[in-house]
Length: 220
Length: 341
Image (cartoon, rainbow over all chains, first blue to last red):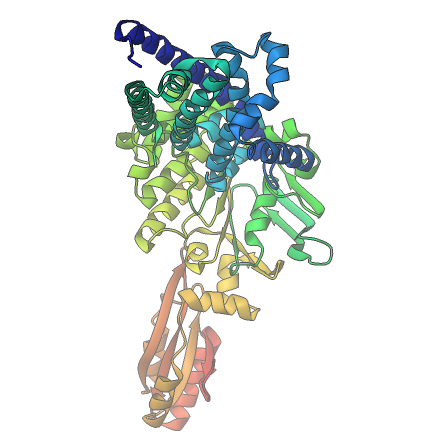
């Protein structure tokens, strides 16, 4: 079957826009939620500034339950929730919800891992100055971990581009959807190649921005 | 200024309890430099962290500036902490902040205005002689410079007390002396009470007025540095003193000297006040006795001299005896009959 290129290009453009929208919105929401969960996970650890066994263990358990679920299954599993909040399970906006939930827990782990690598002596120094837990979180923990944190979030962003392709297959739109419907189901290799090339370019750009930003904040 | 009353601190579970600090009572006076020395694991670091409650005591009272710290609310505790500066062995500077930013941070916490912060930071940079490094990040500084930033940061809020956790242990000898003289200036110019812990007797000898020796969580000896150096009681204390004042001959050398001995060998111990009189030559001259200084070690400690000489007296037996008797009235003499370890 022959592709009609004059209608194909606008569609590609639209799909790329949808993918970027899904990834960007997910990134914004998941970074905020993930940062909050990751920080909570870190500060409630044993011996830390807001040590709390119950909070730590339940968050830890929750993350370990959500994380291993394959995204394509998770997508279907949370669809009732998606319908409840978004009114529909189809479309770009609806895809952002499951993507955000899944990505938040991934971000939380990345945040926690980067915070753990901060020298505890630095936190102790801030405590010795009379800093409150909140002042330590925003004035010490986040700035100290920011460089590696950005790299970690960049890593997740690349994963999100992958997520968005899967979300596409269940009606989220975007490049994934395009590649499936045109490329896979209609055996059109050229569409497949174009979408894959665009996905690769998106990943390159994301990684470039991430590297640039992290270098700006990395002081070690 | 800082009082410990029967303070104990244990870690671990009931079955596997580690008693880091056991029943310590200490009094640190306003304006002094108080040192706590001990080997690693002696509990000195825990003791120091009890002052600003980075560690909670298991029992006992800690009183700082008339406030019992282990009874304060979180808010009161944070306020007290801003009155106690702290510096660390590994400096613990914020790697994401510049030198300027590090020193400004405690002032930001205290809610100072930007202009006042700027003024204070610049004053402190001048005090630690790092004006040209204000915009550098800690990673670009040497160890000594990092510790100077640490000191400036600790002094930012004009605390009354500075506590130092092995502040010079990561530095080379030359830089150590530079930091120690800076700490002495902090003590003199800002009249800040300093409590420091160390495993280096050199630090105690250089700047402390009083010292406590810790072993296995307990204070085993305490007193004026001069008294401790001249009259140590405990073996650990003697070992620490020997690490900076080596007044012992090796066994090998002692045996060799004994073989070649022509007269009687004495250790003459000098204490305050007598070291600047020519007593040895004056006495020996009067009795026509020769003296031969074999080994000597005279030190300055707290602007006083003390130490010992190993001297051989050669001459008529009766005359030598007279010299010994006369000298014994002025200085402490100990005949070296067998090897002292």
